[in-house]
Length: 453
Ligand SMILES: [Zn+2]
Ligand SMILES: [Zn+2]
Image (cartoon, rainbow, N blue to C red):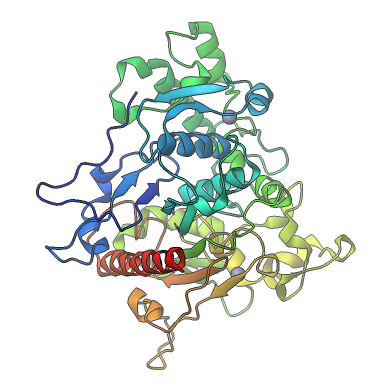
């Protein structure tokens, strides 16, 4: 299957001096411009005469695991047959090779011809995973983390989310999934789609080429057995497990998320909750836009989750009381009963309806990475409610352009899909894309200056 790439409006050409932008969608994504809407005008400065920055949606599987997505992202850009790696494939029981991309989105991709990346939700985590693989030379020689000039993430669950346990992942035995849970139902749905995939339109494309799910490759009895208990969904090579705290700890132990000194990083963090009471740090949904209503039940469960039930215990529970950013030895682990209400900071319960704030910030704990958390704008009155954060107001502050460091910006009164993927034409979205466009143009200029020095 060949991904045709984005079509330019008639009469407009892409700017050859603008580094192209690759967009990586999240779990269950893959709809591209059909739902992302009219962001490009704002990205390009909203000037009719301006040349366009080339924008390309990556063709990755909507339900592929993080490792598989990172491989799919690489080959959708470079072209060629997706190679998941011999060792990974044999460990996880699927074919080594997947889809063939006859034409890559940007085959000339290299450290000398880098790209900008933007990822929403799991798309952000995918980009970081790919950068680690580039650093390790997973795809052979000639790769380098400098191939990513910038990384912008929005609501990315870098360090996991407790929502995955609410939806079905077992708290004591992940990657097993509880029967009669949302996760179990979703797994069955995926297998039905996979089985019927040769008959379905492209919008239902699972990219499961390496898994032999369709009726052309799998017998009905195999299909029925997978419906009963999915070997894919209940494996460590699946998105639900990738979002557990255990999987995130393992990724970080391998060095995933360590910043590259020549890449520019920014993350946008959404929050739709507030403290549930005067004592304790658990959260409840605050008054938020109508569009957040479907996420309010999720926000409540994420905001009140009891981390002490998790086995194995997440690494962040080993931090000192009141100092969530400082690591202590294992012997100083907190007692489970006292942990939830008082010892961890709000950021473990405050959330965007899907992901807690601490996980959206960046990979690794603040004490183990380079980060700058942009403070919220000063309150103009004594109102108790935090005011919505205007995006431009913050980044218009004189912030030095420094690579190898995460700039983290929290947007209050916003949720997991406020900024993307759905186009609502809100002020927040317009400001986001305008500001992103301005920032990318600045990076393009500084990259040119570095080249000419
Ligand atoms: Zn895999
Ligand atoms: Zn930080």
